[in-house]
Length: 181
Image (tube, rainbow, N blue to C red):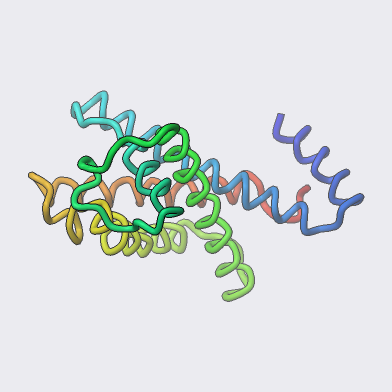
């Protein structure tokens, strides 16, 4: 199946140029990495009884951007928005794809090398800056989830999810290396 997809992308790349192959790689790596986090969260839910991620709240946050509202105290007090769950899931995957693009650009253009497991894990852990210092405070959860009932537990879950995202970045990159399309 992957070989068939690579052949198809190879044909399209010949017609549309090499940028298409890079775009497809970024898309594939981002989807693989983000899907890995979703599987990990489902596993945590099944094993430890943790609640699933509420992408509806993230969608509500994103939907309020167009009205100029970026900070909520807390997001649960903000009225529901039509389609917030779909918006949240879409944002979740769009961010994963954007992070994959950034990671691959840093590795290939910045360092002149391919992805490695260590670099993918380090990159994903560094990305914790975004939820801890932007998203969680904007949702009214405080810096590093300080306003949550169990902030240390939330942080541990955040670290584990980002670690799995890094693993997914690496696995996606080695499953769909550039130049094979």
